[in-house]
Amino acid sequence: MNAKLTLTIEQSIIEKAKKIAKKQKHSLSGLIENYLLALTKESVKDGEDIVLTPIVKSLKSSYKAQKDLDYKKELSEQLTEKYL
Image 1: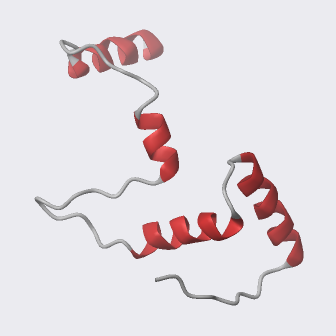
Image 2 (image 1 turned 180 degrees about the vertical axis):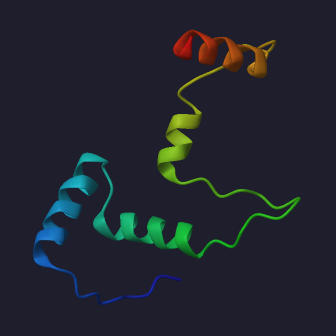
């Protein structure tokens, strides 16, 4: 059930947040709700589902790794290339 909440926030911050929400095609209320959800979510314990924010969900579906990818080997090669 949704409930109404009144907040007192500096006007310039509200305007910036509205622009961000519009760019992300969300409402300001939705952004604040997602932030509060993430803020109030208890730490994940073994066996519990992880709640992903919309941004993380969009990133998660944007890249498909090869099934036989050796993550540790790939990371090692990339770090070696970067720093040596």
